[in-house]
Amino acid sequence: MVVLAASIVTKSGKVLLSRQFVDMTRIRIEGLLAAFPKLVGSGKQHTYVETENVRYVLSPIEALYLLLVTNKQSNILEDLETLRLLSKLVNEYSYSPDEESIGKSAFELIFAFDEVICLGHKENVTVAQVKQYCEMESHEEKLHKLVLQSKINETKDVMKRKASEIDKSKIDKNRGDKGGFMSMGSGRIETGFSELSISSSGSGFGSGSGFGALTTDLDAFSTNPKGRQPSAATAPPKGFGMQLGKSQKTNQFLESLKAEGELIVDDVQPKAGLSRVAAAPLTDPVTLTVEEKLNVTLKRDGGMSSLAVEGTLSLQILNQEDGLIQVQIETGGNPGILFKTHPNMNKELFSNENILGLKDPNRPFPTGPGGDEAGVGLLKWRMQSADESMVPLTINCWPSVSGNETHVSIEYEASTMFDLRNVVISVPLPALREAPNVRQIDGEWRYDSRNSVLEWSILLIDDTNRSGSLEFVVPPADSSAFFPISVEFSATSTYSDLKVVNIIPLRGGAAPKFSQRTKLITGDYKVV
Image 1 (tube, rainbow, N blue to C red):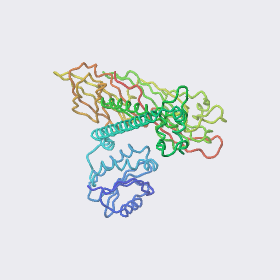
Image 2 (image 1 turned 180 degrees about the vertical axis):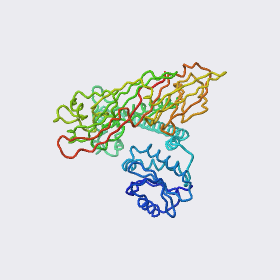
Image 3 (image 1 turned 45 degrees about the horizontal axis):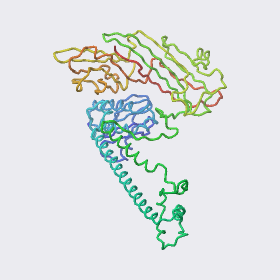
Image 4 (image 1 turned 30 degrees about the vertical axis):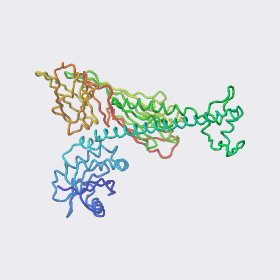
């Protein structure tokens, strides 16, 4: 099998992204991709089309095509498997399958494609491995940077120490010179000393008298007569000597913390307006966010104790002229969900027409990107259920003692309701001297020695891995030591299936462009 190129094109033939895996000219790949829309007939479904020289293996993604250009001798089954893996990566790295999102994540997609295909041949990797390779952190690189930073800090300390010694020697030398000058013994000279030290014309003394070489270094001289205030021009800089000592002491303290393994970040004063960092920049004039938080308590012996869902719909408006609007929504029709509008909303309008608008139609919604990150709350809802089929992810833990070891088997089963992302199953462990012996795992694992917790991570749970298992061995321990197990994940669909249908402008004219963000997150999800 030889894959010539992997590309993402629109159905009209516009090329959004293309990665070549063999040597070919730009004119040739552009010609191949330009010929593709003519080969795909309208109203027909294809998995591949062929020409005299190449084969196009394709997968539609809404208004786009994910395309593999291969030679005709390649294995079509392997091509389809490669295409399926690349399709998962596109969904993983792009926020939504449209031109704007693909353009923003183009480089991440190219790097991910390179991990899947090497010189035209497919690598034996999974989505989780590709993401791990793209985000790989090197321990040796971190160690090298720490050593390099330590040398830089040590050099800075030596430099400051040498500068302090040089300044101190200059001050001592100047004090010695001033002492010799005052030993001449003249009250008149002592009285007029400050005027002499700041005079640049040398008036009052001839150049041959030896005083023309005096500079403003004599400003630090402190033997003024009692009761005489030093002039403002001769005042030494405030805190100059103390700053060097303070910096050196601070650096020594930071070095001692670094030696103990603490991560030290330089203290940088935050700039105005940057104290709060938004999770994602807003691009559309109107953005509506649907968020549901799932709280589930499962029993270790099977079954469910409780399931509760709390949801919110919030609104964010960038421009003030778009504030006079109403939001029309559509719910999934789940009778177990109880909706509650904000006190300022028109409840009758929502009950009759599923439209969210303020009681006073002449009052605009709050606007501006500098407002609350969560936006303006429009609607809340809550659902409680005792139906175990509503649980998206169940966990079974089976610890058993055998001799001087405890064998622990954990398995998960995910329902088909949601595709779960960034799943982390945290299993508490008894106090251990070393990491547990993991013998089998579907996914990745990490041992948190400080909290004695084994974290089992699965990047994505979809139709390809609705179930998985983990097996590890630890020294003898009671079965209760492995509970409670906590679970974290997110999803892009919700129980309420709430959708924003339309934005209604109250002043007439065209409705502002809007976007909807939907997410399901876990709150208190555990197995006790």
